Image (cartoon, rainbow, N blue to C red; front, side):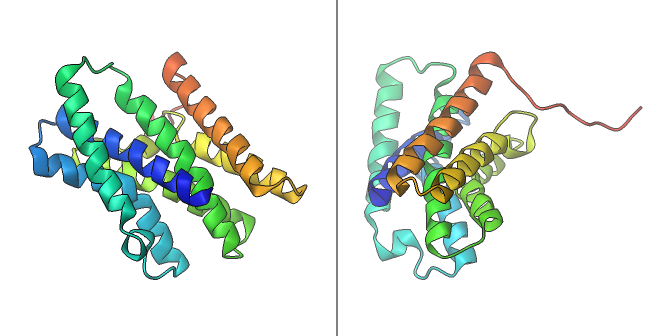
Length: 201
């Protein structure tokens, strides 16, 4: 199940990277690069920090083929159909949810403490998006007032709580995914934001 969810997450994040690249008017190579860093950036950083060598997409290059396919399908669909204004945010929310729970399980399987599991899950879910936003000269969603990392943390905490009471991992992952996705999509739909603490003038 973890492998299947990883590939779904790669697909969704590759699509969000391709959409961001097209919004920034990049060429085909730029689209592929942005799709790739968005899809595998967070997982790569996680694997390096956890000492998992080789990293997941070198050990099994299937995600690379998925990235190319997802990028081309996204480009083709964008040329043929109108792209909804919120398409990038929705794709990003689903990718965040998928990678947050899979990243948390990877860290849990490595025997990490709950705090590290939360950090690794959040990093896996948001790392690729941070790289994508930096490359397109945007302030990363992770650093804005939007409910983003908070959604990932909430879902991972639910996942860990369910695991403590011995809920099977697949069920805990699904429920954690639902919490992350629902929280993030609700934030997008209703423009929910965290308070901003600026310097007094």
